[in-house]
Image (cartoon, rainbow, N blue to C red):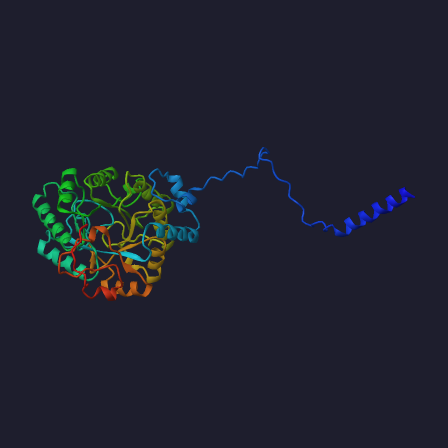
Length: 408
């Protein structure tokens, strides 16, 4: 009897416990991983391609190989242009275009045989040779260029070199000083230059010296025989050592093979100790009487590829649409700007060939929301003269209320 009662009591207790127990959770605990257990390592990052390295670059590099530049150049054009535009925005203000004006301060009579040039005395181009322009006439042209928005004034003389041109150098020094006093960049192209001449121009305040390589080393002998490729590189070295900005580029449409010769041109400049401050891209303007007259016009795709590749390979360099731009419709020019070009020549003439005029360029840039670039070297402003800031052309036509003097 006692055992039966104990069994029933135990059963009642068990039932009460079951009715008061919370139901089990349907959420299952995740087993903890012991700190001593090995972790699965993420897969190692895949090495970047040359193209990806160029797009992701945070600084310029100077150890490019031709094969690397060629791989960039051969990228599908839309992808190449987009990548160049992306890199352009890393290193430059989007929509800022440097306006430059180029004056021929000494025309014709050059002894060189550059097969594209109207100023060579070897060819019958009906060009009349002139003496060096006066200092006053050059400075008057510079003032006109500044009033129209240019912030770089370039002066070109058709000479092989500056040997024995003591009087000419003195006048050019005065031109450079006068242009700089206006608050403009000053650039000259005078042929070959030695170290002492480069130092003299630097002391005068020269901002930049233009000396184009024209094309690749391989194609160069087909274009010029009176000056070697290495002589051109030596002038560039003399200019750079003097502390002057180097402006060096090429001419497209000289009978070259774009896939190799445009790559070769860019490689020559991209592997210098310092990249050129500006890279002019010229489209051949065929001059009747020169050996290059009758060449097939350069294709737009080759111009855009050259600009975009140069932008990726030399990201900090200003890329300048130079000679031949006047033959390009506005839409083609805009494609070049989108691919990384950010400077033009504008004004009455470009040496001996026609140039897009100031008013034409002002209207074009206003339509596309572009604005003039202000550079460090063009911030020397004479007191009481209007300062042309990097704003719209409409506001540029009115004198600025800020007439304070700044220094470069």
